[in-house]
Amino acid sequence: MKDVIKAFRKIVHLTFPPESSNRPVVCNLTRLFDLTFNILKAHITPRQEGAMIIEIVGSEENYRKGIAYLKEQGVNTSSVAQRISRDDEACIECGLCTALCPTGALAVEPAARRVCFESERCTACGMCTRVCPVGAMKVMLNNDW
Image (cartoon, rainbow, N blue to C red; front, side, top):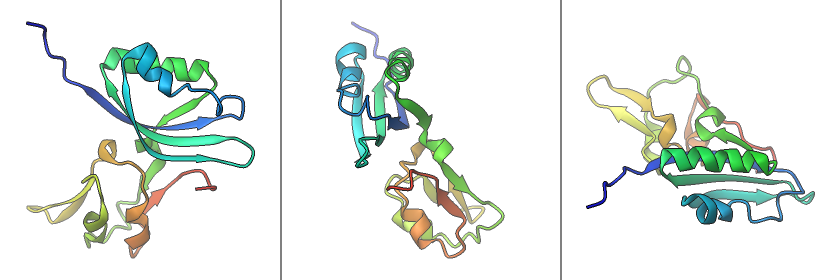
């Protein structure tokens, strides 16, 4: 029986220059590297510059190969975790953000009564920034979104 490899998951922010936004580079992740992807957010500007947030699933080795391929195609990649900013000192631990977080990246730790942020689960949807009364959560995305 074949060994079952636990799927590696990563949420990634991609930006495409105009010359790359009309090519199927993301679809090629499946065909060339046996990766699956889920588009969480996408946008193309009038100048044909593209931006996406996708979840990529597959083996860690194939993920690395796929990211290298995207970079070769002129696509800039960054972890969504690098696009989220949380000001721990500004947070008043009210928990409003946890009620709207669709992925559970924000949750209240019952024992400590503190809001915990698991950046790897975050999809940068921005829901937390809309309800935070003190602006402790910030999403740093393309201004066109």
